[in-house]
Image (cartoon, rainbow, N blue to C red; front, side, top):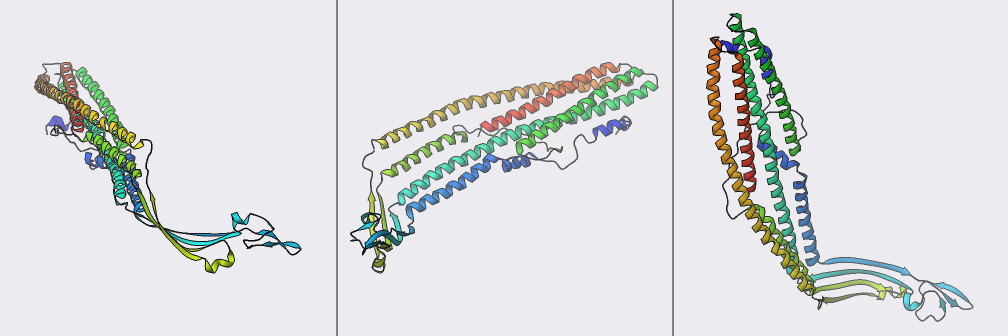
Length: 433
């Protein structure tokens, strides 16, 4: 390190040290993982998929498994019957009772006493169960694809914000270096002014420039902190501390002509429509089940010991006519399935143009960057020459500051171009999926 570098003002050193707190660097990968973990939509899709799987099992059980139940009934319908010269209540009146007040025994039977075990077993429903399972699987495929799209969108949004944060970091590093250069030149100028080779006004000019860049540094730190908070908001991170970010660079992904995961949603929608049609058609299949019951069933309490029995049978039902609903629903499904072809074709047309535009913008930025880098090298050579001239007392500091400001503006443009290129690459990779 030269003597002039050792003479950098203490307050400038304190300003430059701690531009960003020296914590362990956080990477883009860490932020993406946090965004995925905190996404309510990804969580909701996961829960819905689990719920669909359970509902599919429930419906399959209703189609394939026997339903066993029990029913117990105890009902009394007392009547006021004639007995001798008067009337008396009877809880279990004889069915042939001639004279009484109360519910008609032909309706109430005087009571009901039953305790029955029932069994209902659907049969020949294997195809129906598979069709229902296919419908819920199609729903889960749609939810899974939505999760992939959400993850992809989060990746783009978080990466773009991360790039903006890196832009501020690059600007902070350049401002830090710029302040060091100005402070070094100020010390050198002060020594020359002490020897009478330069004026005190030259030192004042450098002091003003130093204060201006220090103000820019403070403003840039605030901008970086705000951008970092926006990144935390995107990722659902409850933290307001200022941390350092690891530098990263994006590269264009290889194109995959004729294929895009964005169009998968259209095919999945068509598949779901097809399964809906199949489930609708199930109502036209024969419905067959075996049923059986056993137990007590009587309306007259004295007969309870003799009324234990059982029954068994087969139940069959079939829809014969429904006013052509089946044909209308099939036509409805066919019409909706046509939209998938239209959407897919439209996406590829627009996306090819979109990606070509982005590639052209990147080529333009590369050309601008090369030109600015050449100018930057020329400015650096000129600033070196000016410092030599100032050291010899042959040039005013004002000319040096003017060129330094132009070099600063040029560097700012270089950082913006590099940021825009990274943002364009991120956008291209998003659509090239």
